[in-house]
Image 1 (tube, helix red, strand yellow):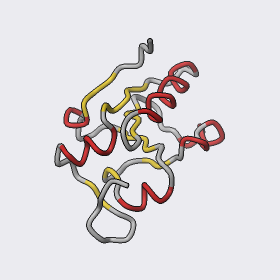
Image 2 (cartoon, one colour):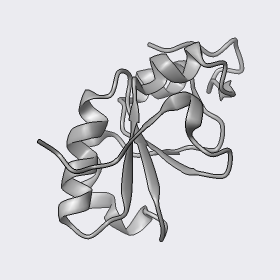
Image 3 (tube, helix red, strand yellow):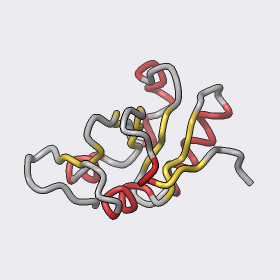
Image 4 (cartoon, one colour):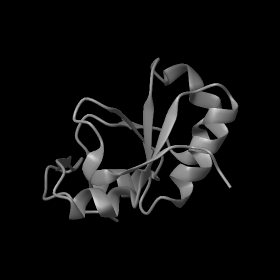
Length: 107
């Protein structure tokens, strides 16, 4: 069992640093406004891009983000997994943007 803290998408603080670990097409369709995008497979090579402090890790449904959060925690990072991922984020009415400028959606 993981000891990575979990938080419902609706309860992520507005000023939280959100790390989105989904693939490019998922990110392009819709993501949390202001989130940092590093696909799951690229996280180990891009650690230098992660800011100091607590990171709220998100994916589409919560599985990939859980694995990334566990790995980051084992490597000394302060992380929280966003329960339900971007699906729950959208359901909670949290702000989203898309790369196309069209109505954002969760892919």
